[in-house]
Amino acid sequence: MINTSLIITVFNRSHLIRKALLSLQNQSVKPDELILSDDGSTEDIVAAISDIVQSFDFPVKFVQQENKGFRLAKCRNNGVRNSNGNLLIFLDQDLIHTKNVIDTFIKSYKKSIFISGVPIWLSKEKSALITDDKIINNNFLELISDSERRYIDKHYRKNKFYYYMHKLNLVNKPPLRGGCCAIDKEDFVAINGYDEKYIGWGSEDDDMGHRLYSFGRAGVNPFRKEYTLHLYHEKASIKNVRLKEQANYRYHSSKREKILSGEFRTEYGFDNPFDEDTVSVVKLN
Image 1 (tube, helix red, strand yellow):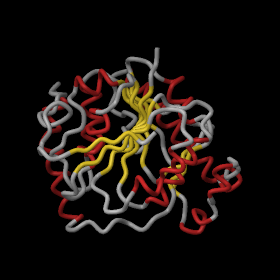
Image 2 (image 1 turned 120 degrees about the horizontal axis):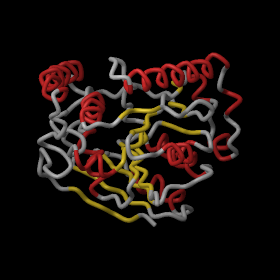
Image 3 (image 1 turned 180 degrees about the horizontal axis):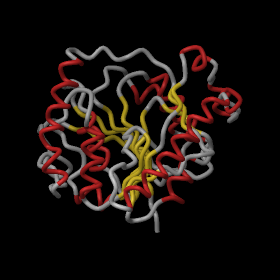
Image 4 (image 1 turned 180 degrees about the vertical axis):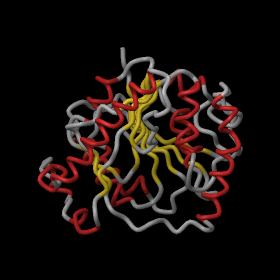
């Protein structure tokens, strides 16, 4: 039996989180639980979403770590540490979805794979047209252009080709996109989750994907007629973001050969946190 834990990582921008949760209300199949894993927001996220959360007929937890800078890898691990499902679905807070996205994750699930989708990135002007009413009434499909639909179809076909290339032991592999993916919990635990030494933006998803492949899993993209839309927002102001990105890239590059040779389990991850700090857990409904 498949039990789903939906983990949405959040940090401020509560107006986007509200839209993501309104979109979740319209899913044809709901998760068995929702975990909002927070990276130390300065906004009162709980107050901002309480009215929506109270309407959900599945449990919702708010897990919050201290604000010590951008720590997405640790944030995702926190969500898993407080999860009960055997299928982990990870989504970003700035995404809305057509109604069968969660159902597609579930129907595509099997033990030998991980699942990853490709969002449509909306412009500032188009994002402004995605009102709460459009999300509630599920009538934002009209805003998806033919070129955007072709973009998704192109990635679907390319990822399918890459999947079979990988099965034939050839080079290309569909990547893991951590903002819209699903991983078997046993696999996640076996490779020790996300590497928490990734601090600041970049490379944690590449690392996770490569370790899943090293563990013997393969990536699939089943999303051809269902869409995930990335709502526009200004880029976060992260101090020394370029330096952090470069440091993470160098760290990942230093691990590549070991991962390719079968060292799929990271040292600092799910069962061995890199930073020992306070993590609070609150049930919201």
